[in-house]
Image (cartoon, rainbow, N blue to C red; front, side, top):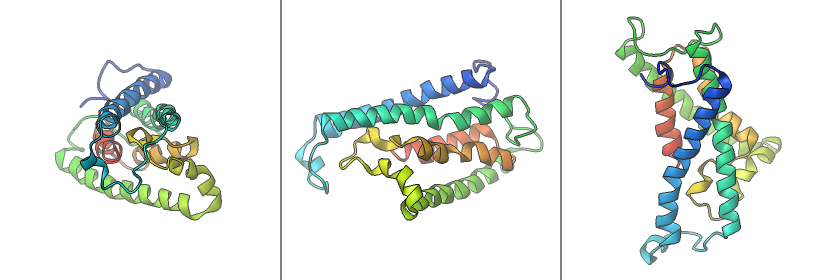
Length: 197
């Protein structure tokens, strides 16, 4: 496939993390900037008339969103970088694998895609619910809700603990289950990252 088997990835964990982080920032900005321009730089009455909060966010709040999103991309990519590093080095600590083989054919990979989708969606809901339910967790999660009128830059503008917990399944799922790393990352990138924008 793509990530696990490419020779373009560095061999070190820190190198993989840096590469993933830079790609994460590029993807977040590549998705957020065009949406921001469309809805905040050149809005029309038709676009804004259904908004529950018609005020524009201040430039300072947008700046905070952008800074937190860049930091969030670096934090959110550590778990997948570690997962990739462990899988590429055939570590005993992971069951994640690269590519297809006789044991992990297309049917198995499709089955695991739906399995990980269900557990990932539940995990996303559950950790978010916990962040709203318990005071100690709310203290960590509340910065996610500080933007009264969020722009597309606020999609991953979370604090450290939130980002770590948000991306933890990308490390835990391959530790617990035999899963194709490339498919898992594509799934998360599409359903939970791009879908959130």
